[in-house]
Each structure stands twice: as C-alpha cells, then as structure tokens.
Length: 106
Image 1 (tube, rainbow, N blue to C red):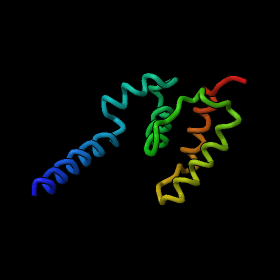
Image 2: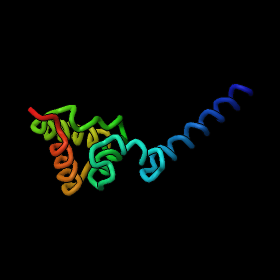
Image 3: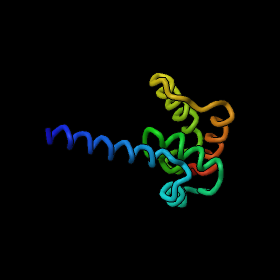
C-alpha cells in the first residue's frame, strides 16, 4: 500500500511540475529568455515556447542561417508525426526570421 501511495505522490508532483513548466509567462521562463538574443521580443518567446516544448530550444547561433530552414522543417515533421500542433505559416516565418537573424555567421 505504501508503494501505491508513493507512486501517487510522485505522479502528483510530476503533474504539478508539468503544469507550471508549460506556462510561458512564468518568472522562470522570463529569466531563461534573458539568455536568448532579443529575449524580450515576441519572436524569441514564440521560439522558446514552441521549440522548447519537446526539448531545450538551442541558441540561434548554434547553426548558420542557411541550416535553420531545414532544421525547422524537420522539427515540423516530428511534431506532425506525433500529432502535436506544428507552427502555422506566420509562426513558422517568425521563428525562421528570428533564428536567421541571430544565427552563427559564416
């Protein structure tokens, strides 16, 4: 019986963590966004929340501008394959523009 109670407690903690982690307006999110270029912009917030929903959103300068188009397209396919909401056309363009603006220089 104590194993069941421990499991339920752990599940409750994980659920609460997940609920707070997905809030894009939290103080923790705002603090993390400070490390991103133009972190206070809507484009940075969109990138951080959408791309960070499955994994940590990498810094834009990790790739050159030309690589981001293919990377974002691949991530869109992964989201579609997992029945997750992918970026709409406007979001896609905003994210690509943000990433390319802050990408690694050749």
